[in-house]
Amino acid sequence: MIELSLEKARRWFTEEHEARLAPLAEFALGELNDRNRDAFGKGWIDWPAADHSALYREVDAIAADFRAKSNATVVIGIGGSYLGAQSALSMAKPAFTGEGDHEVIFAGQQLSPTYHAHLLQYLDKREVTLVVVSKSGTTLEPSAVFHTFREYLEKRSGVEEANRRICAITDAEKGSLRQFADERRYVTLPIPDDIGGRYSVLTAVGLLPMALAGIDYKRVMQGAARMREELAKLKVADHPAVKYALARHVLYQQGFVAEALVTYEPRVADFAGWWQQLFGESQGKDGTGLFPTMLRYTTDLHSMGQYVQDARKILVETVLDVHFSDEPELVVPRGLDEKNAYLDGVSFSRLQEVAVESVMVAHSEAGVPNILIRAKGDPESLYGELVYFFEIACAVGGYLMGTNPFDQPGVEAYKNEMRSRLKA
Ligand SMILES: O=P(O)(O)OC[C@H]1O[C@H](O)[C@H](O)[C@@H](O)[C@@H]1O
Image 1 (cartoon, rainbow, N blue to C red):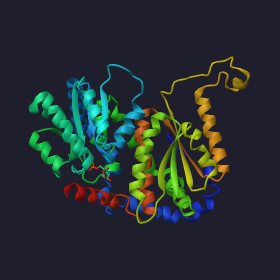
Image 2: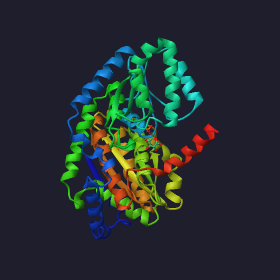
Image 3: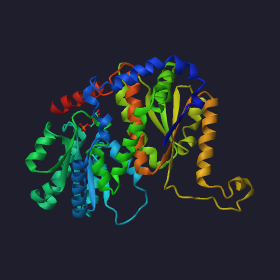
Image 4: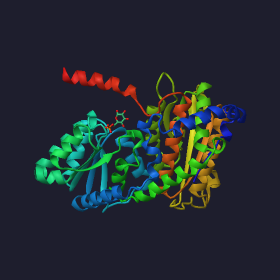
């Protein structure tokens, strides 16, 4: 369940704004629903409702095989081929679970020699499988890391056995990774042509890492399908994803040029990383777009809180207040000293709740618009709901701004520069 509250942003985004801009919101939602417009990037919209039983069978078979063969799978990818899977695992796989688990370790999400060399050393004591994820099949970081780890595996277990321990998730037909995987007869899973990297977490890109980590990914898909169905029924005036998109659009026009997704739950913090790519690449173009950033409270209140409260007012806070059904009850002990007595017997859930309310009041009164998105449910289905909710909001927001939310022409500049230097 996802609820939006604009109460602490109403000073800036009034009901009058909302009414006056309703036709613009209608237009943006219409653009999203027009499947012929930017059709190339829209495969994700109806994806959760389609029958994926054949894909699920393949995912389950690969996950079972890799879990039987190994106790650690390295998932190599970057951007949309990394952030979604990582955020799903953080949200739905409890931390501190200890021995006996099948480890899923991410790599190729940067170029650190230390990280990757240390990981290779660590793998010496493990049985290893690899999953390489790249839609284009040509991205520098995963290519460099994949071939390094592939060679490691081939030296360790021979080419034949290594080939049986590698899965490639890539375009069904195109790209050098597809060609390489077919030549080596790797097991492969496709990334649909009409779903861009940052919208791809509910395809094999996210589902296989989830399955490897033991997450019930079918519940994730059910959550996304439920959210799709709910949102599809709504008119603009009641549509929380459209309202969120419209609020941040209006706030941007008033000079709030950055938006922080605020989380209070470490399990949700990596979701903000996924959200950041989604909004950054979809809307940061043509000299416009809010700068998406993230704040992890209450930790960052003790480092960034001063800035948020008192510095120049450029920031919108979007508070993602998530409550999981598996949240344990934890209570501060009684009999504390006089100064701490107000904490006596108080539950941590209550502390979190009071922190959310108090921070929203303090920051909004100081001039920081606060949007509240409250979400409740089990971690798997809620992950699916949240992904779908923010994807819709992001695409609608792109259309509000008059941009195409499915391309990212700007990321090529540094890549071209790098390629030309490396080839020189
Ligand atoms: O999946 P890949 O083709 O390897 O792409 C991985 C990422 O790299 C690129 O630089 C794009 O900006 C991202 O949108 C993409 O998700």
